Image (tube, rainbow, N blue to C red):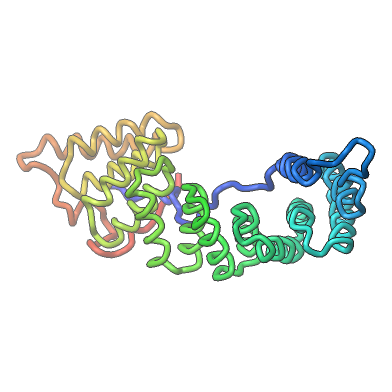
Length: 292
């Protein structure tokens, strides 16, 4: 009865973009501290060449003139090579233009100058991921996580590693998220699929059910139905398929499975044998995927 749907993919990326006007707040806070103690008559730090150029670069970013922001931040760096904020801003400008080599170089310099910057390490990882430099991206993401452990970043790292075929490393991060009961459905659905492929049906049922509970999705409920059928839990499978039938993308296949389960429940036995519940698959082998 049924196959796992193919909608819950380990390689699904999490959305991420540059951090909007975050550079403005950081820059203003930094310069307010740096300028403390100056008198009204004295020259302010904004008048210093490197900071004046950085301020102009910030203004260009706010206008979404990313090419100008990159040029001005580069000029600020020429004036002050260790200007961390200018390096970071230059990376942001390059990221908005999808110039990933430049972004990686800029974020890398910012992280070198300020290893304790979560933002620089995180965005360095993002730029390297875009460049398919998986090991470099993983190192940067792990450095960021050591500074601030965020679920969405750990999940991003896990999915990147899965896509790269590094399942053991990915599983370590996925399990860490599960241990603290992450609210990210994709983590649970991925754990469910990995457990299913190992023929760990109880583990797959638990993970798929958690994913469906977190997000009422037809494909998620369909997967719960498939696993419960193989566990010979026909009442549970019926409930899951009925939930899947309430969603347009899985209504037709779910209704067919509902009919099959109800017919099986009428028979003299307690249900369909697990090894016959899913034609075309055998325990311990990956399940052919179907999309609806």
